[in-house]
Image (tube, rainbow, N blue to C red):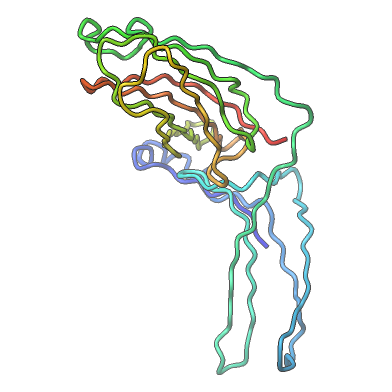
Length: 255
């Protein structure tokens, strides 16, 4: 049985951070081996051999929750090896098992967020004068989220001079690898769901509802060598190809 964290640097960070290559080596969380059957012959027919491994870590290590990311991967596997006599090939089979982190004590305090998007509230705008007039309001019920429950809220297009083409919710993972010498921080998309299509009715509440996918999300994690954080973007695309994005950092936990 083996559990490890594999860290990878993105192409843009490799040259810059060669100095701390050591911190990008796999971090072993748990490793144990057991001999299930002594040498000998197995009887014909089906033989079932029970086994168990206590999930106990050595020292001050922590069993982080299973997570499949781009630059951070936390994975637990069982590997069974069957050694056979000279002429027969050894057999080996690997299988992943999923680890959930222990639930945290107490409910997270709800942190509702109200937002208003207008041309004036936008940052990183090249020519503000060319932007069509619009007013979008909404709220997220909480940015402290329980991973097994959906992210919810609503959005209202109060007015917009340009026709709306699409409204989308984009879930983003922000993975940071590194150590004291420097950090490589990369944001990548996990999923994108469309919550409205076409020029929506003005002043109509549009529900925001997103389920967090298993394996590709985990409770927000911060350790010495790596961090896994999550954000959600509300993306509004107008017909003249203006793209409006509002970003909200999320904190995920397991109850």
